Amino acid sequence: MGVFFSESPVFAAVNIVEVFLRCDIVGQVITVGLMVFSLVAWTVMFGKHFELKKLRALNHAFESHLRDERALLDLPESYRNKRSIPYADVFADALEGYWRAAAIGKEKGDDNIRAKLEHAENAIQRALARQTLRYESSMIFLASIVSGAPFLGLLGTVWGVMEAFSAVAQQQTAGIQQIAPGISAALLTTIAGLVVAIPSVFGYNILLASTRRLITEMENYASSLADRLELESK
Image (cartoon, rainbow, N blue to C red; front, side, top):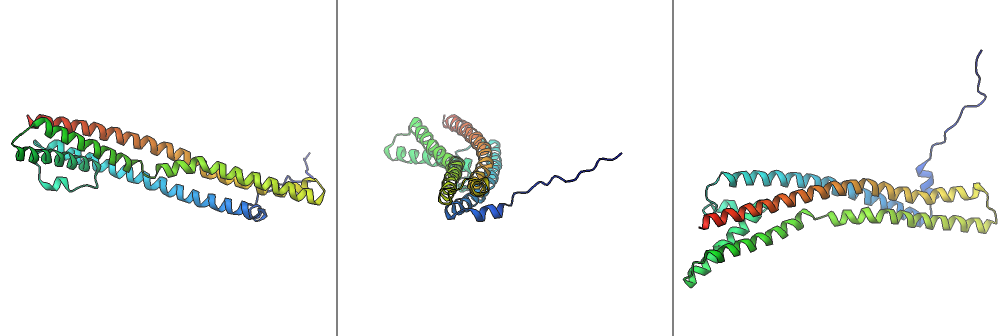
């Protein structure tokens, strides 16, 4: 005994190109714009990931070198010329602030240790703020893509649906064959918006966590640096 099927089920695949071509100029512009945003978002996410990873490795290497030094105040000038490393930039500003206050105090005949330490701490705070901005660069742009892409997709969908019903009204017919092509074309922009936003939101959250970790590590390093300068000044 056998089982025979008179018809085989046919699953129609959605042809994205055909759907895109059915969109009007507004929908096509929004869809292409969202695809460009997607490429930019992926570029920013990968670039930021590797940048943060590199900076963290450089920071730890520099901190390890400082840990091996017995006196920070007498280190050679080469330690202050590595401004591309965040920890080195904080260190350079701290020492420059310290010795600048020392030079002013020497001119006035007043070697005030507290004044030197205060200048060093102020320089550290300025360097921390500068490096924090460096860590957070490009994050605002990525957050804008995350929040804006779905709304652009929704705008394209609403516009496409409005155009589809307008065309039906002109033909004075409301069959599924007249409405379906326009609706499917309208929904393409929503799909494009989600394709951009979903990976971007995961990437943004991962990068935000990495950025906060690096900022916390840098604040701990700055606190340790200020303590060592105070101990060496006594």
